[in-house]
Image 1 (cartoon, rainbow, N blue to C red):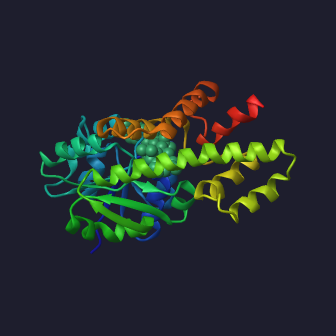
Image 2: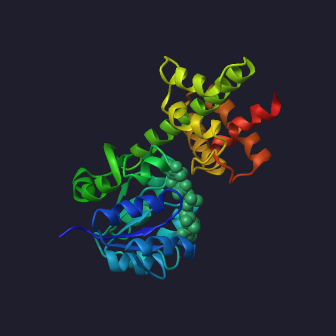
Image 3: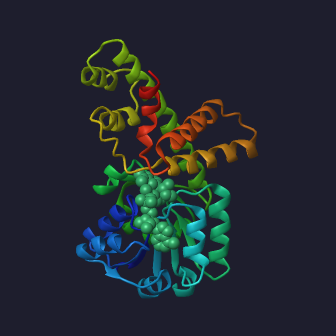
Length: 290
Ligand code: NAD
């Protein structure tokens, strides 16, 4: 019989991941503080619970996809949290993006209550999550990974076991750092093309076929050019993840000149458009400046 899961945090990413689990036949019990998000998943076949603890007690394992380590800690270890509901040897799968220190600390809280942790941040964005094609970066025990692999593969096209808990956070923070640098670079490139009088659609395709192409240009420049900017990922989340990269750099003595500059640009973007603006709107800073 397949494992069943509580899923807490049904936002832009988590809602799509939970839907993939349901689509693939898993029994999913959901909780989110936003009732509309819960209703969307119930309509797809999920069961609703009143609290993370009740969802976890019903399912036996729990998955979280939440906006910050502080919220993850409250949902895990706070009143009515997962640790009150999970059975001994139940698994907590954390799919939110955390820094290494944060996930190691949270996993220790779980371990003190005999709960095993698999960290499983994902990369590829909401559009790939919606079709079950996002990539999972996994940290934790190999046997635990094998046990939950069917669920991970129901949500993600590829998964990479990186090492113990904390190792997936490191590579996830690195890939996001690259993505934000690429986003600012793609914005600068498109502005140069525009000011150079080029057709922007044609410039987009020429760059896709060039040595300057990147995953971010390919997937995000179109959203910028069509004016929707709708990437499903906010400035606040970008600043959270850049903060993890800068903290890691400080601890390890690696000078991150590009990431430091890009972090400052995102601070400007948040000041101009708000923390809940899509991260792609960072290129509007350039548009507004020219
Ligand atoms: P989001 O803000 O869209 O969703 C967060 C959800 O958590 C919301 O539905 C909110 O109501 C719920 N929530 C907040 N506090 C809660 C609480 N105390 N109890 C229960 N529910 C609570 O965020 P998102 O874009 O889905 O991102 C979630 C995590 O995934 C973040 O760590 C983010 O960095 C990471 N991530 C996001 C993307 C993306 O493309 N959006 C991609 C990769 C990783």
